[in-house]
Image (cartoon, rainbow, N blue to C red; front, side, top):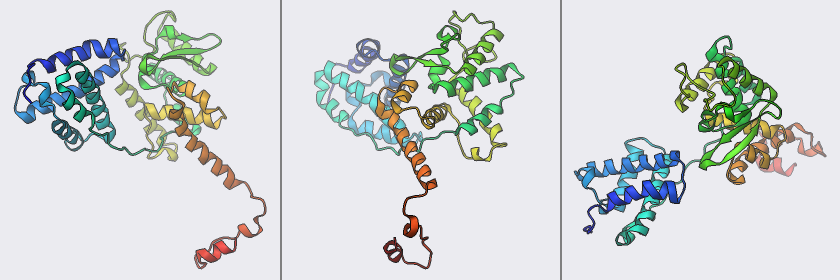
Length: 338
């Protein structure tokens, strides 16, 4: 198809990022950046594959076949997971829904792009640490140094609140209430806000950290900073978690083979609350889930807890059912004997 509007792609991209996403849809800067990265990758791939400059590409260059080749490139050449591939495709779908509304001449092309399916992804098991394992990680922190005291307060607050990594990095002194009732104000996904209670021990750690850094609790200074006084990055947090997990593994063998990253900290909080008898609705609010369906994944862990309890309990009328199944006994005979 020959475009009658040479600048249709450029115009659509400008309006999509300048008006549609931030104003009409009110998406967060983080989401907009993710959409931008996806479309930048697509444009660079298309330009290279067609032997053109990015500046002269138009909407008609972004055919379904071209986008399918791009998605294949993500998985085979960039070694992206199916989940990452789906994130990129979601951004492309969003852009073409906008194109279809703004540029009717590309409606048929947009419909074909929107028909490109998402790929099924494997559901990984939930990674989390047991309470005693989390205690071992905290015990591995050297609190005699300033960085160690910061790290201990960071890990304790993350475990207390179950925050996402960008939420903990966004905590400022003015977001803390370190007098009863102890709590922290968090800013989550989609600009959602919530207040999370703090254990007295966590509040004391944060109070000590504020005093050491001479922070006014009414200021907007970030709570967790690096040695240059700049806010920690998500990569910095991952490094800190991995460092203390490695140290703790030398003392606790059950940690071998486990990973500790911001989201597994979040899962550890949820599992700890669940085992303490907290209901799923409260956990959902605690973690800032948009839907209870997201929290329901922890119900599987609850079932495992129930199975463990059942295995420890002696069933009623065990005289015949307690017979063991020996290797030299057929399955049918064993079942008949129950």
